[in-house]
Length: 222
Image 1: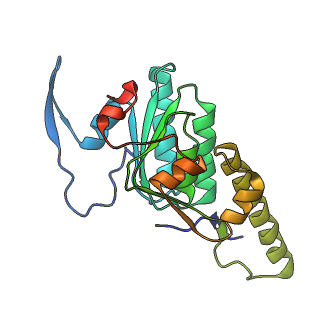
Image 2 (image 1 turned 180 degrees about the horizontal axis):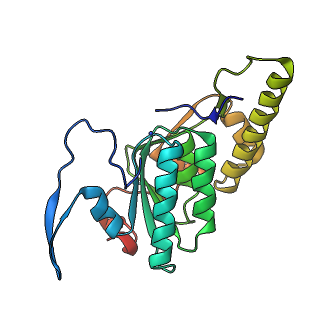
């Protein structure tokens, strides 16, 4: 059976995104001397996770590991997740989604650039009142797909069709739960790609605030 996905191009804070240039490192003075760091490790120290590639099994494992570690370090302190992702695997997305709901800390999601497909669901899954986007960010929602669907024996095609319908129902229910739209409205909206500006995503209920300045950020990330 083909692996279900949303389509899209894949991040984490453990492994730097596919390099187009050498990721800079820097030295930071601590009580124990100087420590060499890279930007993603520094963000993680500040309880910030960066999802900056396609959502796949590898990036999902890294994101989930970071969420669980940050919870173990301080279960009462919020976590921030910055998102700039084209989406990806349905099962990888649901793994991250379930972990976000499972852990104790509240999670603030901040969209930089885009949160498409699977990444849009993760954006909406942030804690109520703490789902944010920058002014020129975009959010895209659409129905899930199965790669190379329609191939194989009739019984296999039926299994694939049932699975994609299950996935679609889950997606409709989840987006309705995390927005101010009904499941019936979501059903219509995801039939084709629905691209939302930050302001439109705010109206849709997928985010809670459009940020124009760091001064308007909640206290936890100032």
